[in-house]
Structures are given as structure tokens and as C-alpha cells.
Length: 332
Image (tube, rainbow, N blue to C red; front, top):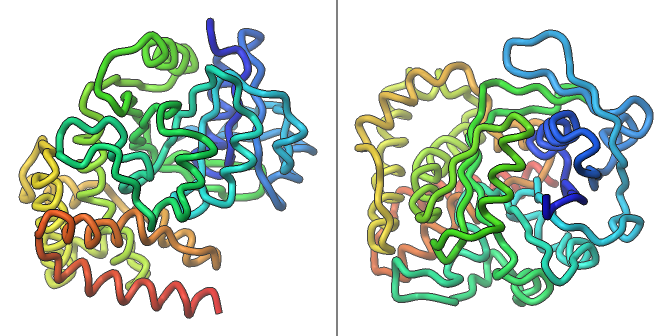
């Protein structure tokens, strides 16, 4: 196995869940460590990390090396980031300190990622850098887009207490090289995650998967934060459901202009959303916890990329203005 030292950088809800799954599933085949902070880190150091899988009342416990100082860890074969898009820039140097020459970095991100246009063959914008996602190009320079394995996660997770993570569904993960080509590293990482009990699919069109998930996230995350409503409540309100559909339409129009393909219609996505259940989105979780909101990758990029391809996005612009002010007021 080429990846024997693995660090989960940002072991909150989703990152923490992956850390437990990898530690429990790989056993002595790999050394797992995590970078975390605060009370969550303190609890991990004291009692390990508990993972409650969907429908289970008995946790899986994993004792994992945990630190808030990445320089305390040796260089890693594989890094998996559990950070949100707005948290990556400040972590760039810490992640860079863990890199070897051949280290790969699996970036689990919602929305448009900072590396999006690296070796992009679906649009004429290959190697375009997105300043709003990567100010000053720190991620591009210190980590390098060539190290990235893109990852789209469909896994509901929440930190219910320090040191305890609960999953709301049996998740799945989609992995892909930014270039769209198969690779030995991609195959090895997919096999490793599968050994740990994760549901893994590899794709040659990771950008399609990014846009497919963003179709829902760009609508439900900010609307849920603005209204503090669960997804069931949003879809039960005709006016809010109509707004969701309008945002989804803008997302798809921008995505198609950049070469993305979609696997369902807007009507089908709306119908699927009615059956998701009483889910509290990650943005609503952050709002209630007083944390900064992940706005630019999910909503701001729809506007930025819409301007790049001359696609108007008036509803997204309104939502972006409202949720940005909500974030400022919440932080204040």
C-alpha cells in the first residue's frame, strides 16, 4: 500500500468520521493522525473519537494521534482535508509542512474548489486561478493543484458533542483527478477508502460531480441559514421551494457554459429534495454555532463564474448579498 501515513487535516464532523473509519478499517496497515482544535481536540486526546453511524446507538471508538500543531507530525503519504473552502487558506502552510515529494491531497470540498481550472479540458479556462477562493495564490503555490485528488462527498455528519460525530446517512464519496485521467494514485486511494468501509466511486469527470452537488448546496445552504429552516420545511413552503428551483437553474446554466453535464432535471432534483428528510445543512449548523459561513465557494462562485461566461445570476446575487450580511452580523 503506497499510503501508509495518513493525516486528516480538519477532523470536525466529516473529517472526524473519515478518521475513525480509516483507523478502524485499516488497522495496523496505516498510521492515522488528525489535526483538530478546541474542545473537540481535547476530547479526542482524552477519550478518543466516537463515531455513531446512521441508525446506530453504539459508537465506534478510535484512539488516534491528535494535534493542533501540524509541525508535530512527520511528513505524510496522504492528506485528507476536512476543512471548508474559507478555512483552507489559513491552513495552507500547515498542510505544506506535511508534504513529501509524492504526497497526494484528497480535498473534500463543497462548491467550486480553488483548483477547479487546473488541467481543465471542459472549458477554455485551463489554469485560471480564482482569487476569491485562493487569495494571493497561497494554496496553488504552497500545496500545488497537481497534488489534488478531487472529492465530492454525500455524507451527512455532525459533531454532537466534543469528540463525538454522528452520521445521518450511509454516505458515498466520488473521487477524481483534476485532469480527468485514470491514475495509479487514484486507484490506490479508492481501494484504501473502500477497505475502510467507505462507498467509493472514481470518475473521469469530477467537475460534473462538483456541479451536480452544487446544484443543491448553492440553494439549500444559504436559504436554510437565512430562514433557519430544515430542508423539509424549505420544500414545504411553496415560495421557498420556487426560490430553490430558481437558484438551481442559475447554477446549471453557469455549469453548462463551463462544459458540465448533469444527470437529472431540475424537477427531478426538487422531487428528490422533498424526500431527504429533516436535515440541518452544514451552513445552518455553522450559523447556530457562531462560526463563519462557507459562502464564497457555494454562492459567490456562481456569480463570479457567471460573469466569466456571460450568464446572469440575479437570484444568486440576491441570496449572496443577504447571507453575506447575515454572516457579518452573526460574527459581530
